[in-house]
Image (cartoon, rainbow, N blue to C red):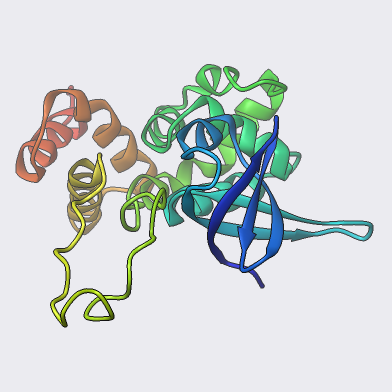
Length: 224
């Protein structure tokens, strides 16, 4: 199983990139969003990969964060959604937008992805709505893997001093607040689907975790 690649960008095509890892070129299929975020040719890159094996072929799919890869696995668990369709959805919607759409039952937003019709969009929402809290709570899993060229911490060229930890990725704070709010609502006895919907609706008006929980609880209250 190939789960991660670290190498240089050797080529960028319409639907995939070629990553050179110690002289071996790996063809990795990516979403439009991922390809747009990649550095230029010859730059160092880290991608998290999913190996899909069929009777007649083997293909690698690449993602810049573990969360994006987890979303791909979740989408392809829906009947009728293959790896390419999942990539199309991920190219059209980022993880936060996708999570909110599923939690709110907004299947029309999924139709922004090329080739995704109303039946598939509705099936995705219906089959994943109970998994919305898990999906919405996915953190970015570390900074995006656009560059990882340095020596290991404390290694040669660092003088034995570990470099500072990387800054958290954009959206990490929001993902943390979302996860904590979903957990708190679950402990209060609310079901996964209703908790996810309330949090998704409340995210636009609340920032930190306590405010998000309060806003979600207002929506869950009778008559809220």
